[in-house]
Image (cartoon, rainbow, N blue to C red):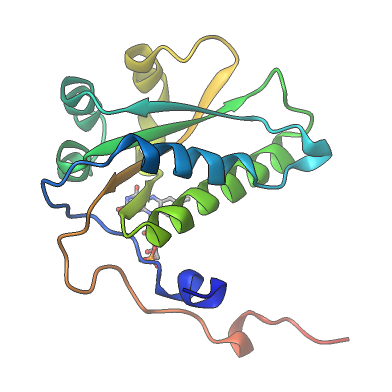
Length: 168
Ligand SMILES: Cc1cc2nc3c(=O)[nH]c(=O)nc-3n(C[C@H](O)[C@H](O)[C@H](O)COP(=O)(O)O)c2cc1C
């Protein structure tokens, strides 16, 4: 797929088959995250890879998106390492870029994925379960699995005319 096709055809996938995700795919997703840009190249992202079903079940009690969490084959919790940070806004944008790289790589591998932000409402409780260590603050959880939906996600996008303030 061309980069444009990969970007345009990616959609959030929230239902998954029973097919397992191999370790090579997990490595490839982390590798994609690693190459994201970051301010001062500070790479403030950290990850916990969750395959354990019991842990996913515990996390599922902390989000409205319970089924996504329990049915996913893999979840990656993404953290902001504040010790490596230099500017909160810029650091979080860098981590967003890393997450987008993960979503695009997953799509490239034929996997489905969804960025879960709502779980941040319970970020302290998530950290009590995942124990990421001090200075690692939860930013998102990304759920992965082979997609079980025909045409998931939404095609709705604002037109360029709606988002472009002006050409100067
Ligand atoms: C910061 C952020 C938080 C999100 N949180 C959730 C979430 O908690 N649950 C969910 O199902 N989708 C979540 N999404 C996915 C969006 O709903 C989705 O990206 C958007 O509707 C566009 O659809 P698409 O990804 O299929 O193109 C989140 C996306 C982003 C970028």
